[in-house]
Length: 379
Image (cartoon, rainbow, N blue to C red; front, side, top):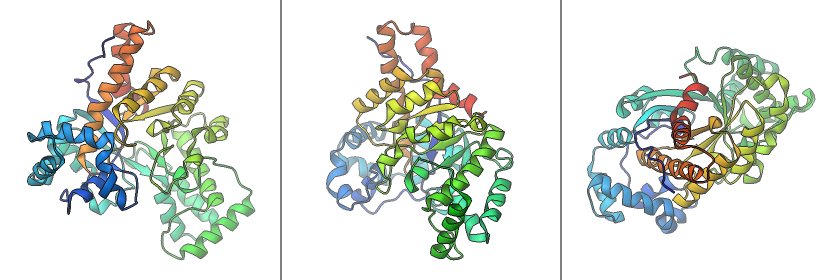
């Protein structure tokens, strides 16, 4: 069995985040923090360096930077480079066609602007709108739930003319993916409870009846315009309840006939719920499964495993590549390398098993890395 060579295929990174303007770090431990989802201080200090992703990164960066494959040497070589120079070099080496950027995090004042990142990477870059950030700002301005709903609908009346290619929800972090329809009285009570806690300033929206109610406003607008909505699913920061991040919770949303025009993108291969995400992509025509090779931070073998799972269940026309890179350019870069390699290996196995011809597998690889996202987001 031979892996497909997809190294020359430009990628559409359909989900990633901004890069810090300041690429200088206090010490190695603070740099390691970029490669873990944990907030526990002991993790970057004592444990991140022994993860499969980090060890692979050190070896690959050593080759890229022309130094010894040891952490101290790599960190030293990285530190000696100008931050913008390093960022541009890694992004260009990743051979990216387009970055689609969640502008909700990190804070905009800390990262390169969308156009600036695209310029450094020699590629196109487009923003996506994080729904919960918009909701929180409107909740701070309006005095009633009905006013918030009307304002939200107005803000999302023409998403593409507002400059965004997609919407994103992090409901999985906040209250879970079991997004329900609530009686008006309970939604109103949730609104007033939020306002009592938040006061007149934007605050973290973790009030389930309120968040669910506002999400349905957004879904209706996105469905009307056929604008994709990305959902964080599965593996994430330590504040997410992984049990509530199972994509099967979204079934009531997917079943609604009035939402069938809503393209739904399940992020992070739904890890560890990849088979469940693949199932949803296989049975609902408007569901797509994102394959993310930077975050969650996994070993290469595990990347091949989830790629096999996705290809084994979902149509190849429903799979889209991403890095979920954030903060440092290393994640955007290594993801593009690992993603091409893992997808090529898994597709090569399908050729060996007689499931695809070689030309079909090559076309599938290009579709996953670039063409599916180009079509889905109307790039």
